[in-house]
Length: 335
Image (cartoon, rainbow, N blue to C red; front, side):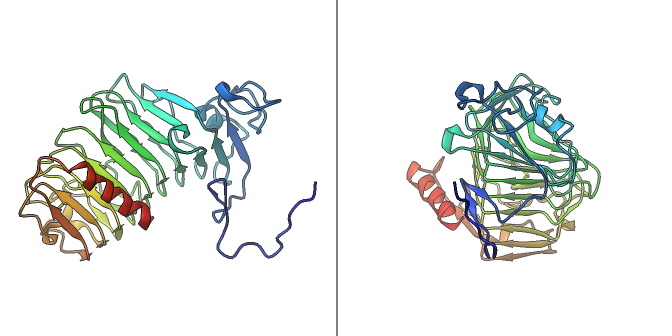
């Protein structure tokens, strides 16, 4: 069989089977299988395998822990469509090897799915720098799971093209990302092109909980729909002496059921005075008739530049299905 040859490369990168190859990795490629749909000549998935295409690892944790997977080399772990994992503790899956990318394959419900249950402390600890995860579904299936990802020494953590779902209003995530209480321990977080469907009505249910000052976060092109009625929190809940500096929050759609207009809708009042950066082209939907673009950031956040943000008030108890569809299409088209 003849092989194609492109000696000049691709000026703007190339995507093959939804894998963006413009972000090339110098390291090795490993595979995590799905024993339910094995390929011809494929060995049964096992963590004792060598992680090749036809001899894949059985679990993501097994792949990360494999001696062949090397930190900071640029290794990639591909996870086959249909792979599932239940996370019941804070130790079931650990992102603790720096510089690896974990990429799920598949579309829709065939994407690898990680379900959190059994305890509020079920989470994925991220304790190494420059880890990326793409194209997964994360399901909250226990009451008030504190956070999907818990970050410590996790500079450069990246989440792209993932979906986060609550099972019901009482089987849910409270936060998607929760940081450590150490300043600049989790700088350069990148959260883009994700969908978050929060059914919890708990007032503390927000996407991001920042427990100490962090820098250079990018949050862009996400659709986040929450049933929660927050009391003093925005999309980003920053600690009193925390906040985000040099951040970029761009082109997100964020909906919650709050009616209080005394706090910022993107960054809550608490901690906002030390935040800096740009908040631009976001659409926020709230139940308050008094909402306006002026409260996108609380008044304490004087260091944050606000450009072309839209706050859309509504008088109904919840957005109509047609409105939700319009918001979804808006973010999909802009992505």
